[in-house]
Length: 294
Image (tube, rainbow, N blue to C red; front, side):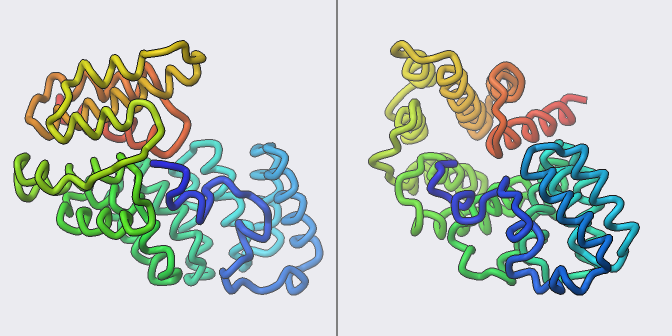
């Protein structure tokens, strides 16, 4: 999704101590923890800020041993595991921290992301719902919840979430497409196309061509041609082709063309893999398709 969406309001990779384990979490102040645990926690946070995940994990583990009733080192270690893409260990640490502090809003957000990456769609939705209960102002921005609802098979709820997101992010083709995908599952392709959210100014290539494809105005080859047009740097070309193949795969899947859906989704997930949440969506979707092939 566009940078103007939920991730700018609640960034996934802000790792400062105040954000990761302090703001709005109702956790006891640092000074109340044993001195050794507090020092270890600060050192772990400093390591995480520098990108040294292994050191952050080691120090957070020592902080947990020094003060096992403090939720903060579990949350910090969970973030380190999340950044290391060890999703199962991240979930385990968020589980442990939330047992100690069940009102830690961002921990539900982070755990919801990790559950999604693990393919635990119902659990992901439940965590996002709890996050919104604790931070209701974030509800319109939460496109990630809409995606989890889609994979959980709750298509009508997903459609409503993307309609809500449209009120705060009016020019995101991806939001319009996911709304279409939900509507297609409940009402069919024709009605989904009729209710396709109009988008005027998504500047990312080839997103306007993707929108025109779902509107029935362009063909799949037009999307690929737009992605390849011009003299783009290799990284930009890969990014364009990632989005082209992801949404071509979703387009063909909605139309019932399983062969082409797999072809494009696998290209997005493997040949043009992206290191962001939509890259995770492609990888998760590829895993779902591979399970269906067995």
